[in-house]
Image 1: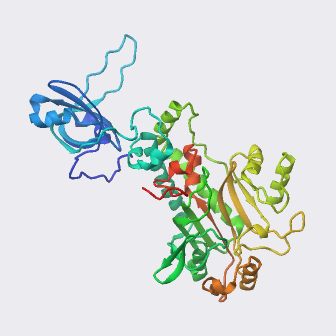
Image 2 (image 1 turned 90 degrees about the vertical axis):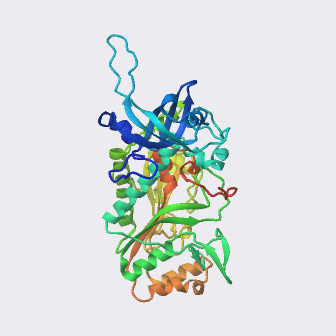
Image 3 (image 1 turned 45 degrees about the vertical axis):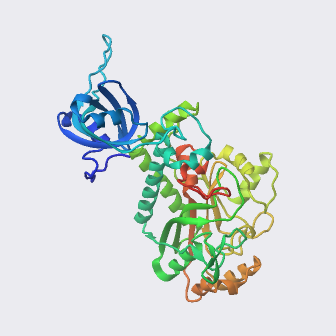
Length: 469
């Protein structure tokens, strides 16, 4: 966390540690109050040194028994690591370490000579998860103790980046004229068909957790909002157990009137380009902790490479040919699975769109032009995916705005139009052509941070086996 220009003192501190460390020369001799976690406590007899950490940095607090209450000094000197401590004292410059002749003088460091201290909360011992120790524990243990796992510098940095990604994405969409909306998460019928629904009782009415804001963002567009977006949760009762699937996830979703699939692909690639550009301009300091950790695990450092525009477009028919020519077994009309994507990614390793999928493989609300046929004569749709390497990031497309075709699509997919009148009725009174997409936030963060599992970049993930904490 960097200090905000609008930061104000609170009941427990006059300054953040970062403000003292970065502004130390101007604060020498000034009395400040700071608070943080006790990263280390050392010293015996009449002196003690406490390394305190908050979200902005680290600083050493120097305590002398003669300068403060004796009982308080004894309590701090014996405090357990990760206890929260508030100290008040004078900012001083630490004595610089000795250097050999010809060696550069290190930059000044600062500490606080403590006159008052208060243990706000003592940490139990032992800690179930190491904070600063180079001790590796399994992901399940880390997630069971996420409140401690977050104190690890590289984990904390990933969630600061997550916040930035949401901010930059939202700013870009607003800049392109999109209005933020919120759709209901308790719904009466499936958004996308299929059986991957979490049923529930809404008082006396059977209902489901929403699979997607899809139908509602379309209704908002039909109502004249024209361009809408949502950043919110969706729920899928899919029994996946992989590094990239969760049963509750957050996504960027947009919908735009008077737009086709190519138009909204443009919105998406510009948004991602904006996110990467802003991170590169403002947030590279967050990768220091991430790459320090990766180095300790013998992993390559993460770099922020701004993707070039436009992203490649590889139509479904062409993608099938690439897979077949690369030795993969696939036929037209079959899904392009991860091992197929590995073959495509050898040629297109970064972000790339896969447009013009067969209509039979897309939801009922995807538009199709009857004249567009695939290599085997099958009907093509205006649906597309966005992939990064082998991983799907997005599903989207132009929507079907002709109500008679929409109802026939439902019948073709063994769905009863009568169950969707709340949705289809919106198309009976003039519906603009429109298009949109949904982009998984966690999968985007996996790319940006180098995380190997979506659970790394979701604060409290929900999968088949986890509903706590």
